[in-house]
Length: 299
Image (cartoon, rainbow, N blue to C red; front, side, top):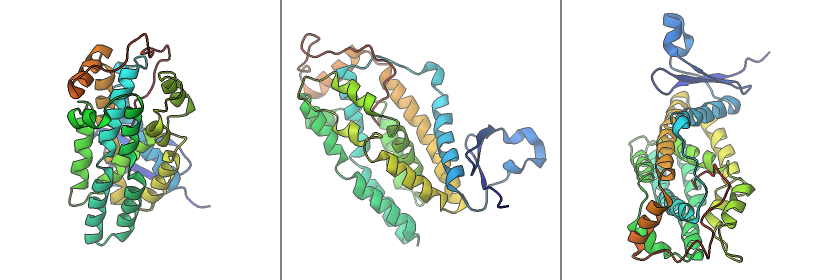
């Protein structure tokens, strides 16, 4: 009988994620077993799809668990969606350039398989920032002026993280960052898109970016491809990717929560200062409130 693959990665110093090829996942304190703890050793050996997805998704869940008790769940408003689109622009505009930079480095390191993977991702992500701009323009917002003058505070650390990862001498962590954002985006479904459409006047389509970065777009297939690719990597690379998935999830959770905790008045004022005028909407012309709660931010 073939033995199932078991993988493990220490992500916080006192917490490791253990995953089996069968799909079982659990969190473990490496110090709890003393010197006889096999999971206190560095993981070696081959990976498998089932255990890799457990490690990656376990890392995201652990990262978001850090703010679960204080997670903001405001009503969806047009102002919040506009700010989310600005964040989406900034997390996507430099993605192709960053991924190509990392790919070039892996070519230099004699790792063409990683370079090919990153170059393909760069091609697939090209132009996504323009989708966000089109959505802003559809809402009557001067998108180019807004994104040029405004980066949401909660998004800045996320953008810097990706820039820094892709500039490293060994930028394997950029795969973990990308997986984190794509996996969260793939959770969005038709219901999330319909909630946004209720904010818009009839005939206005401002969901191009959201559709593309949801289960209705290519994110689900990207997630599956990334899992398979990470599973094929050497153990040290898989460890680094999982650890960065956790770090990115922490930054993403804290950043998005920072934005969601803002009042509608604060968001409207940020936009007004960036474009030099108030938004061309009022509660009487376009609904800025909805009874739906718990809407996830645009990744």
